[in-house]
Length: 83
Image (cartoon, rainbow, N blue to C red; front, side, top):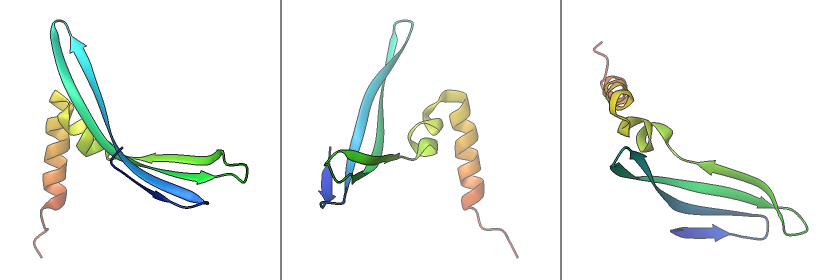
């Protein structure tokens, strides 16, 4: 966890998920950055839990074939259309 804020009604925290994948003898490390919003029930339990993270940037762009397509789409969407 990186930062936490909240009160008696709700809370918000940022985090990084670290994991690795293995393909044969090759191991690759991954990081996904995100945030979580929680709302508390009157008895103190978590009533609502929602994670937010950018799947396109954090995961899809890093997958070999899919990543090329995602980066191309991102560049195209960021390029202004001439008038």
